[in-house]
Image 1 (cartoon, rainbow, N blue to C red):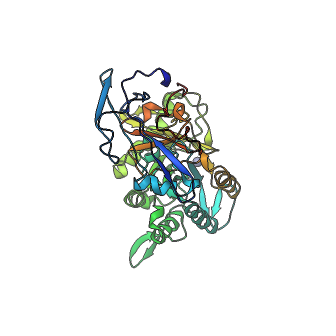
Image 2: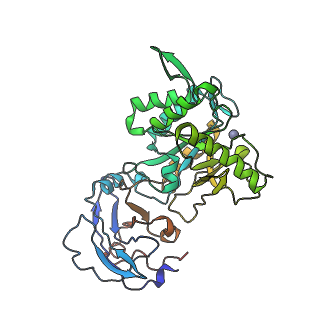
Image 3: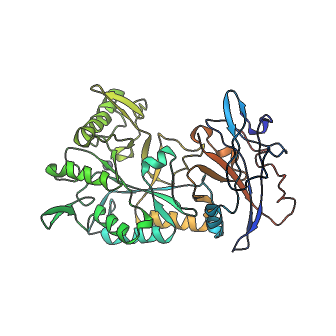
Length: 400
Ligand SMILES: [Zn+2]
């Protein structure tokens, strides 16, 4: 449905001008939200009670096809928006791209499919300095992104469950992560920089994830207890390109069942071995193997660019791109985001709202924004007309 055809049952618009430290002013235009797929708003009227509270969202304004439509307004007084807009490179944009970095082994030397420990530590420093915050892959897939205002979510993934990713050493009679394996390095960085977070997804395969059969269970449990996740890399690391739907279901289902048996955890994402996309897609998202159901909220590719926002209509859960964790690829994309800050997902600090830039309304995938408010803003160009509170944020926007 074209947004421009929306009936006049909505509405609240609200705008406010403010000058921020960098002398850029923004006008925040209130818009809509709705539960599952309703649209927003654009008449010139002000909703009843619009003057009363500049800080809180308001109640039910109308309904359409049985759905309640709630209206919402935001204020620059909101700490999240204010902080985010203090730096023009970090204005909120929750339709921006998110990097999902793909590492393989972490070891002493840099190789084609291995990152050296030293460089992995430098990667974390670089991400941290450039305003990234770690989130779980499942949070990205579910669109449950909660990072501070002005920060960009980042997902780290590790394929193949190598010993260099997770090795135990004995300390004071207890098994603890080797400080030189990926898990140990991540935890050490997190201790020094708790605001960076500690999240990563390990795409494992069998028969012995991380190399030591007797340590599989304690390692999987350790990951889960420390904010990390387990993903599906098929049971036998099989190339699925020419596999039948039944073979695919077996490879995915067998791993899902094994993980569930070991630690009760239900994997919800799949990284394709060798990046080989199967001809039969039907068993990727969900299936049954030996009576046990599995479900993948996302299927990850090998390479080759940042992933779309989960709220974007470009988001394809069965084909999510990643960036290789190599010097060349990381430098390329980190440099790209420094040159193009508007391309990057920047949080508004509020997990219940999706803040987007005016003009991007047609890129919102409304089926994935259920229960969240969509806030549209545009930069004040200095033109008093452009800054007018009567500007309709969604008028003329493309449909989808
Ligand atoms: Zn692999």
